[in-house]
Amino acid sequence: EKGVVQNVLEFKKMCDCCGPQISSALSDPKTKSAIDLLNAVDLRDQVGSYRVIVSNETPQLEDFTLCILQQNDCFNCDAPILDRPRVPLLEKWRGKPLDDEASRQILIGHLDHPAASDASCKKPWSWKIVVGANPAYDAFPMQHQIFYPSGRGKESKSLWYDPVFCVETLDGDLVWCKRHYRCTPRRHWSADENNNEEATSKTKTTPGAWTLTTLDNGMVSEEKWTIIDAMDDLSWCVLHYSGAARRAGQSYVGALLCTSDGQWPESCRSGEGLERIRKAFEKCDLELWELFGGSTEQSYMWSKKFTNWAEENPPPLDRIGDISITSWRKKERERALKEQES
Image (cartoon, rainbow, N blue to C red; front, side):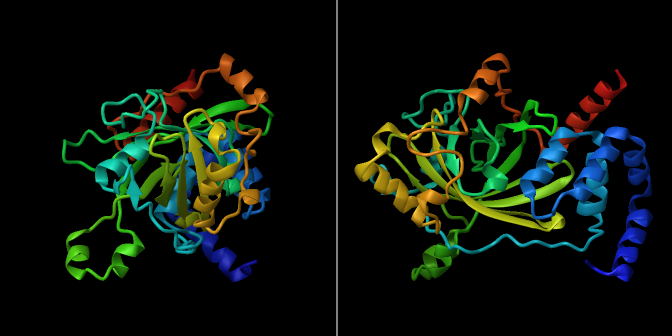
């Protein structure tokens, strides 16, 4: 509890800065219901909060959140991206030091794209998530990762990332959700500890380290992703992430095991294969028993309950393409407003 004085100051700032957005939100029954439900949810319950938002996505709710939290920071939140654990990078892939091209090929994975590796299974997606370590990020089933190059010229090292995943709404319905991230290479902490000062001064970014940013229902999220390990044949990879929605006061960290089909790799259910996956998660300060979504034998993320529904309701796997995050969100809001009016 912040106290009466602080609550009054925050309320005044909200009214001064976002009066029209508040009025519009409270005038729309669905948006008002969402705000009431969010107020009742424990702020630490990121899964519960996200289910409320997805169950009640409206343009008014996005404008409300964008104004109060992101643009005006009415609650004075500033959650940091956590820098622990300090995870190491994959150093070599296919017998060679990891370079920019290899780093992109690992993320692009199995996507049917000219920039993909020759090991690609040529799917409409790059990877499917098998298990993860953070319920707030990994609790949503049938997660498809779609990484593809930015079309900003041949010299561009950036990627786009369009995750497509399923959410169970508060009414018990299943819906597909889609987001749009920009992925840019970043500098990894290990580069600053390199003894070769000349090399590090010339290298501004580090292959295998990425920064992902998005705008999700009015809230900017920034995440630092690191490639921990990947098989030469792309049968699986382990990715670590640490992110924050700063103005919402939420930080999160975790890691993912990804394959082309969302199932635990057959060759890694025991023996050396399983040990290599275990060591990859150990580098992320995680044990296998901490992972959410399934096990070596079965996957909650891809259970019959969900896959049977998906057969009747195919996921929207078309790539959003070379459009800025804000422009795409604007198009989505305009589409939602037209649906409200019709």
